[in-house]
Amino acid sequence: MLKNNKPLILITNDDGIQAKGMNELIRGVRSLGKIVVIAPEGPRSGMSSAISSVNPVRLTLLHKEKDLKVYSCSGTPVDCVKLGINEVLERKPDLLLSGINHGSNAAVCVIYSGTMGAALEGCILGVPSIGVSLTDRSSRADFTQAVWYGKYVAEKVLQQGLPKGVCLNLNVPNLPEVKGLKVATQTMGYWTKEFKKSRDASGYPIYWLTGEFANEEPDNEQNDEWALAQGYAALVPVQVDMTANRWLNRMKKTYEL
Image 1 (cartoon, rainbow, N blue to C red):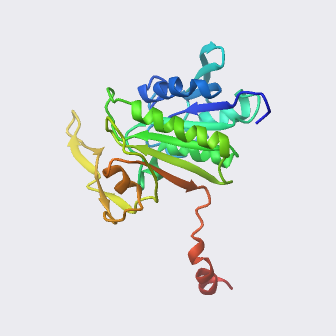
Image 2: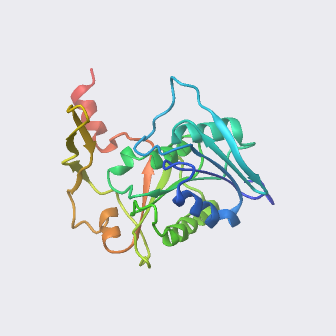
């Protein structure tokens, strides 16, 4: 960052421009620098790293004041990041914050999450990036603790940066007082009983996405689900490079010609 310049912070989410979580985060980090918000015009949960590759994307300036601009975008969370860095901002941001998401993005949810898709995109483009989530989907959720921990981690990242190719997945439990923060691993598991079958007005079958998380390592005190269950915020370093390096040499011996 340039000396004597305020940090430039890009904020987005996957719950939409009106979401309480993101607007609480904006208020919480206003003191950290110059803020530009680019968020989807409506909910885009579960979009992962989806992009608008067929339809054009529209960008609308909604609000402007000193050190704060707010745009809505017709596209996905990743579209918001791409537009921000390539078209809107005068320079590469010093930090990208995605969230605060309404609902947990711990364990394998990181794969499906539009919140984390945006953070990963920022990471790919060389911006220190953090996804922040609260384990409460309610529109009346209290984001006080999530804002505090989000700001705490954001300040650390602004001071110290992040390794190339690594972003952060911060999940905060829905508690009046969080015990502290644990750096954790991603919990291994999968979703089961994922659909609820119903019928539409014409009697045709329809399916609602639901499900239960099957935790494969409930006693592992190093993972994010354990930390959240014990009342801690969980911070997982996530990497863009998905290469299974531990198996690389074995695969070479088996498959290379």
